[in-house]
Image (cartoon, rainbow, N blue to C red; front, side, top):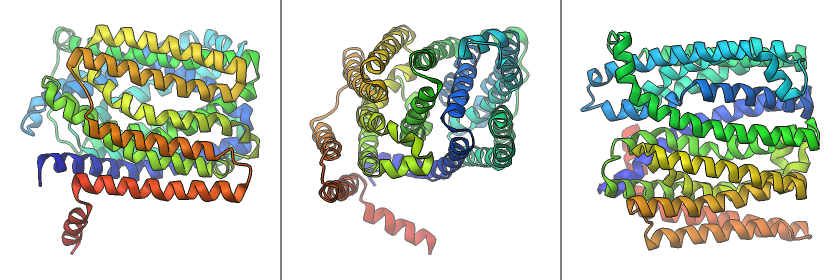
Length: 494
């Protein structure tokens, strides 16, 4: 098998593995969201979103970006599959996550009253923040275990840790929401984070790494590179969280808490269910890119392969989503949430541009380009907030979907210009041909939504879905010979 086919096959296998795990995780998440929407409605989702955003901002500040930066350092240190080469790095990471977890918990308790006033306008949720503070410690300790599995590319163990952690959290949350309804929000947060910690610890122990003794001075000296890159990533993540937080508060002030819940529900569909494909692929993509970060040619090939697979996978998902969005919303939520359909339909088109800009954006992180990364993060966060405020002001929820689409269209062109100028990155002509076909198919399906005749509309959308699936299989088959792959798989089974 050629190197190119092998690379595409590896991307597809990894995506399939995590796709299967994330499918079960999505089902778990769907059940959880359904419970919230049935028992506590849009207002409950609004409260959940504000609590979650507040905690995530503190986590983003205190976590120092270690979750991502440590993956880069572990994968870069891992040589010749020798675990001894990463023992010191792993020891440093685990000490850092303990410190950041304790720091986050302490700050949440200290500023609990202020957090409640900022998020809800009064002190009524102060004790909610105090109780939720422990989740920051649980989360950081989980990070210390999961980044080892991801950095070493132990994908099966990582997949199991994520899946079982989510499953146990759901099992305990069902009776809580049933009996205590809105009062179950805080306990389910705590249980979910503790469940994640338990399974991350269990599966990380299956990788036998000798933990090195690290003194305080050595921790400061050797950990500075992890922290330096981490702070850069934390700042970027914080800007994104802060931007989302501000738009939620803006909607709550000029709209209602129910509108905040609808906004959160819509973007949960986009980012957690559709956007999960990016999380799936980045699990292996980022460590792989970090290991070749000094070779611009290899980076260009890897990014182009990842972008092409991302576009091919996301295209039929977007089209099927546009067809079944009314049914999806009624299954995931209730009929009270149908007003988010226009917002989600505009937003789902943005994923086609995000797929490519996302693939290119990892170049900056893999290379540790802190200065340009910070500048672009600030610019993009300001742009996102401005477009969201503008969109909501003029067109309410639908405007937020339009602003999401415009943002990622701009994001695509800017990231493309940056990577071209700094690293000589470019896509070849064949990629653009495939990409344009995918854009046209998704755009036509979106426009078909406005056909008044229901039978004619869904007939055309269904035809487009069939064409997109056939096109994707045709292109993937050219890259990796699916027949040969399936025959090989059948031989292994026999």
